[in-house]
Length: 134
Image (cartoon, rainbow, N blue to C red; front, side, top):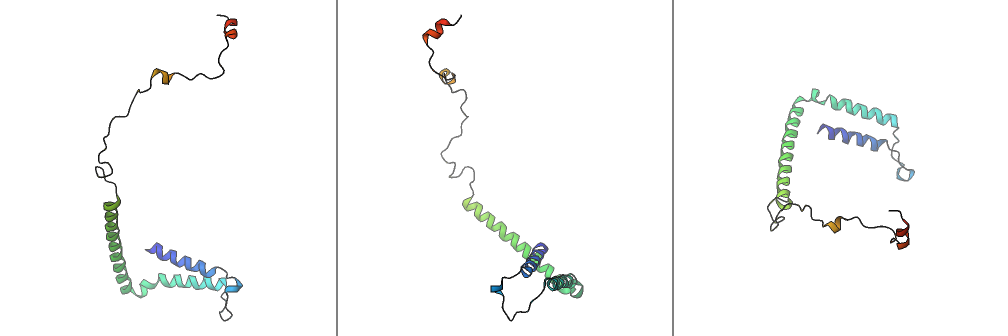
């Protein structure tokens, strides 16, 4: 959960630091420099780090709430996984394999004619065969 909060924070910082095109700027909006935005962001991070020191009860309740949320999310994920596995998962011996028999793979099924190498090239002439030494 802490990872999500950090990611959300840094994405917000990145979005705030991206320059806008002149067409998207409004005249009444105050201009914030990059340095001011960075210092404000660092102050916000510093303030968040010390929140539990200032409000320990809020941190305890928040921790319990996040733990409960995590347990509920885990239970919901398990229910969803079971539901999808039940409806879409292929279990051995079900309709996917009904009526099929499993046998041994075939071995040594080629005939001698199949194993003979095919002849390549032009057919031999009778004169050439006659001139060859035996």
